[in-house]
Length: 346
Ligand code: GZL
Picture: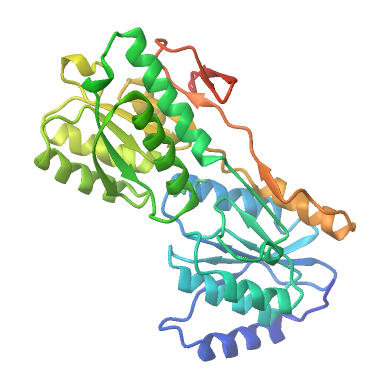
């Protein structure tokens, strides 16, 4: 445990920020003063692009809040890897006890994680994964099986076509992808691609919608101008789905599950956003693959284990469900495991 003074840190942070060469000093938020005797955790959060991200941030801030044994130094990377790398270097200069990283995309982390290793500061990954040659650069990871999330939603779609006797070749799907190169996007897109190959679905187009509502609306507007046969929209998070539904309705179509009668079915992921859940209640979103953001307590448990000399599991997956207010499909089976479809409003 390191004994640090706030003034020294702030001075160091200032030196590091001015010397870092980044165009804009990265705002590293000191949460509360850092008294000696607390475990100091530097958290590089990738951004605030979605409701999921906000819930994830709140979960971390609560787990490492002022009434705990920790002092949290929080940085919002504003969805830019360069900001996250600068923040990690600041944490190294501040000589924090632990670095927690929610990486925006998988590649480009080897050098800065090498620097953390050389500084003997353990790194814990949360949510998305990093693609590094040397896995010893991080202690452990906690997050979701994103490909499984995609498989569950696609199995729900397949079962829906079976119940309604809809031929697979009648499905014309667009994939509104999340931030390209992020683990969540790679896994969810892979889930759809594999299901489409297995069932003979037509993937009309893929578009980067960056997990945001505005991009979801924008790319869906373009797609509806470009194609007249779209009847399923696979949104890789709820914020995109909300944007897509606004575009669908603005173009004079109806978001709904009755695709044989001209409605456009919207599928999504997360299950956090209240507006998305209200759309699910109306059937405007047919199915949501749950993605659990509440990683704060799990990360705290990992740090506690490390403090006590115990080694956490390297990879830790959270349990997740599948949501729908439609009753057409009651369970889905993926990789021989059966998942009950849950009504998120009950
Ligand atoms: C998933 C997470 C994704 C969410 C999006 O764990 O990385 O990023 O699904 C968020 O809402 O933007």
